[in-house]
Length: 85
Image 1 (cartoon, rainbow, N blue to C red):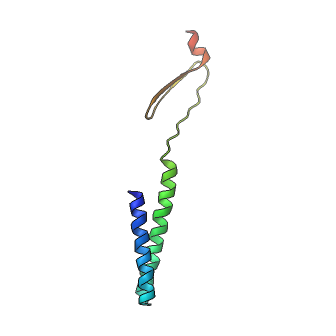
Image 2: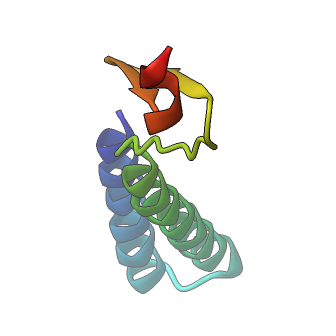
Image 3: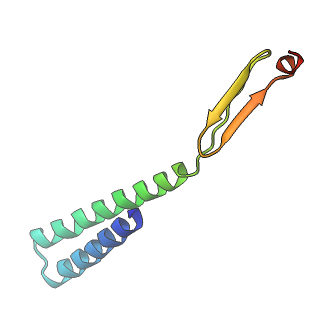
């Protein structure tokens, strides 16, 4: 979905630049500039969100305790002190 938005805003920017060269007025330049801003915003959001899509979970537990973490899989960790009991 995000890549579709980047593609649409890029097409908008290209059409805006073409229209600005065809009809050099303030309105056509404004269309090209807003297309460029929309494309940059969509592209930056796409790049930042693609880095966040890789879930990395980690936790640190102290002695005589256990940690439980569920996020796609279940991970239960025991420390050395807990295995005595």
